[in-house]
Length: 532
Image (cartoon, rainbow, N blue to C red):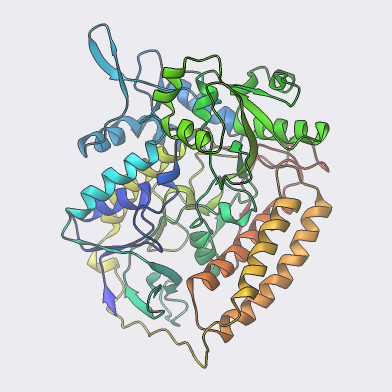
């Protein structure tokens, strides 16, 4: 049994930011199921929303966030995260992060971008690879830390709690089981301070902008030990994913629309003005539904994002990654519109936490996309995600240090080793892949951008059957990353469906034909669910 003062599951912006701060106070293990850079963060293109301009203000950023969140944001949380943003940006700058700048009246300042739902330019970026640059900066700093172990190719299996072990004292998190992907062996790690920073669950849908690692692991683990989960019906579909038979999960950044890109239908019409006065710069929930409606109405396979009126040099400099990727697929964005469709992008719900990332289980914190602080409400404002990861990671570390007293810690305990029982290696991987595919297809068809109770009920019934099959498979075979991810996907899919069925209205990212209007009398509240 290994022991650490802090254990972090996930190596994105939230997990690494926390680890770097915690390393000043004790030993830290960072557990990631692929390589360190294999995160949602590294795929983030747009940037980080933060007030840095004299033309902007905290009040405007708060207002834009609240408006996008469709009445479900926690205003105190929004204000806290927005006002603490500049200090956290400075943390990144001190690590060597260099955001794009421009020269104005003889001095240098941030070259700020604008995205949908923002009333001002406030998005700091590094061309169109912001997340990748942040990830690299954090990993470079992590390598310099002597008190941090980065355990790559290790996947968290389950949390270990006092209740699970039968202790009469208050339930709390005591450790975690992890599986070494290479050896297949399950290891036990002891820690009173576990931080889930596992990102989202985009792979629960057939079409997503997320990398393959986004399988909802943190939410599923928390659910299994009875932690409260919030607002999982609000899954954000990014309006503009590249539509091409050979392209996989490639996002066309919202910054393209922020720089003047116009959405057009198959007849070349600027259709967004019919749906919202802000046109192509409306918030994501509105744009995604409009594209979905336009595709269904016309029978076309996609719509088009047109930014051909901008100079070639500007597009190559501002969007080098998007330009080169599109060109590789035969699309020259300087001369022709980019074919795009919506795809699952971000979970606005997650493990219910306070603004410090604390969950309903003592000793367990959740930060970044896996947590639900109340910042995003029913629809996330563009580029507030990396911001939340930075701010909440900092606050989580401070909160843990405040409560870290020997008198409040559990007495030393030896955690039981993982018991595999009478198992055999998985020799029918086709069953895993079939179930994985079925979950993703039924979620796309029944629990997508537009929903109905009938579709949700069908999804719920099939998911219950799938969960039974997977449970039997799980206990009869040796655990593997593929099997664990399938188990987590099925769990998170069921939580999304149950949450969606309980909200009898349309709000933000949850739109149902059975209840097409908002119901402020009954549903200005969070959807809270738990296993226990």
